[in-house]
Length: 330
Image 1 (tube, rainbow, N blue to C red):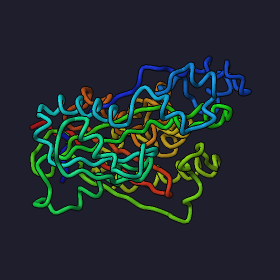
Image 2 (image 1 turned 45 degrees about the vertical axis):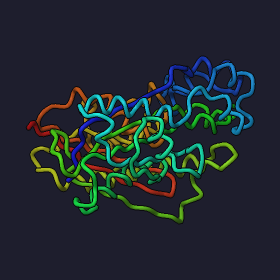
Image 3 (image 1 turned 90 degrees about the vertical axis):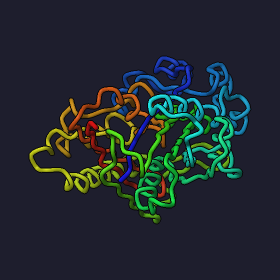
């Protein structure tokens, strides 16, 4: 069993609201955006003037223009998780990272984050784009406990606006930047524990969602949304089997923060009440691999004894998975 000792998140200060997108003159309006994706604001590591002037025609220039590196946002999220866990950075024995948009293929992003934090431990990337957190948790949950250190830091920096074409309204309205961090252990008990994990893939759909190495984000929108709804419901159904029937109606749900309308469709079909649906996409946009775990972090202080949370994520690959999280005071 995995135990979560701390969660953290970071979103940059620059806000892309719907009025900003209207002013880019890309044939969109606030009404159009809200009707289709339900997103009001997003955050970006890019200067707003840079987006206005260039519309990010060259994603490679966006890296130079960025106000933060992935290592910096990773360290900021990790420091919040460390504070919540009540441990020092020196107690971390391993760092695992993943992202939709890593800054480089070599070195591993986990190494640049570990260096930014100031720790010297085994560090590597376990990356499955927007479903990275499911892959990471599932991997650790299946590991031999004796092979792992007491504390593992999982960081998912997803600063993806650097790959958004701001002449394309279908992409521009979706993406925001965010970074999540979790501190987990297989050895040290905490009140928040991961009871079950799962991960599945259908690689024949690899071309449906892509961040090309030096190009803009592309996806087959309608097909991807249908996939996301279908697989999120499948994850919920699979993980509900581990919950007593009398408690199934009180399950809380954290989904992949792709867009609000997609999440509402999932909740409606899966019969999850509005009060049990935890989301942040309307304020932060699609933060890729960081979306669901950052939501977990933002709700950290509200969880109480007896709560059960299903986290379901989907991503490029195509890959989907999730975790059943339980809260039990100790």
